[in-house]
Length: 338
Image 1: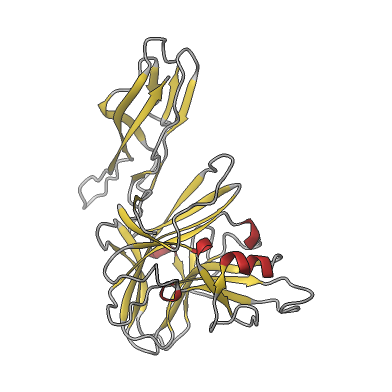
Image 2: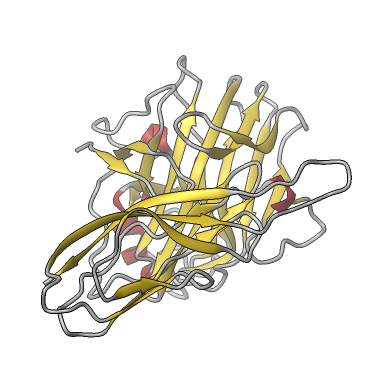
């Protein structure tokens, strides 16, 4: 099934969902941490990437390349991976989640865009893992790369050229190197993979890759989300760390009861200053300019839904030979009071 969704901060405004649209159910929605990733965060080995950065690995003949760019529209920014011929092969890996059990992943998704109309190839997602089986299937294998490739997903979810698509890996099929139980020739569902390798853990990273005998293409990745029951991390690729409001909704309030909710932003040049630029908050609530905290107590006469727009501005940057710069971002929100 496919549907159009509204994306989170820094991602695509409207995406086509692929490989299932149902997110794992949580007793309560865990928090999401948004991490902007620019070209400066693509680190070439042997230098090790810090938290939030990605190792850039040339696995081919050096042709093609990887960078962050503006667009393709309607995305604000993305990671662009270029294949110039059959000798190109590039990968980027993030190590923030090493040691995480595959069975504990509650979210694993990313967005792609490809210009390759001839073969309709999209960037694939890879996890470097320790399969973990000590007996039975593939016992003793201590390293594998689990591969999710959009073009081998079920026919109901074909890759579409020149369009953004979002792939829910947990609802897709994957294959693993060095594993007889999940060969490239016969990919298996993610749930089957986790059942067959219950002790599998991320060993050296999670990332995306292109190439290895592919024809020329340009592929883009608009975001990468990895989540457990403790929370999710969303990596937002862009050429610069744009200022963005990451709060997309606010909890409801109750009359005569204390209310508290925080607005959040990423990018730009902190510290931030917040304001309401259109509409209004319910009576009894106020927005702290320096922290983004909405707090107070709605009165008994304030039931209803209040729509408003919040604005955040960052710190002014002034240099000797350049004009003063300051970034602004807005977000439409609402609070229901009952």
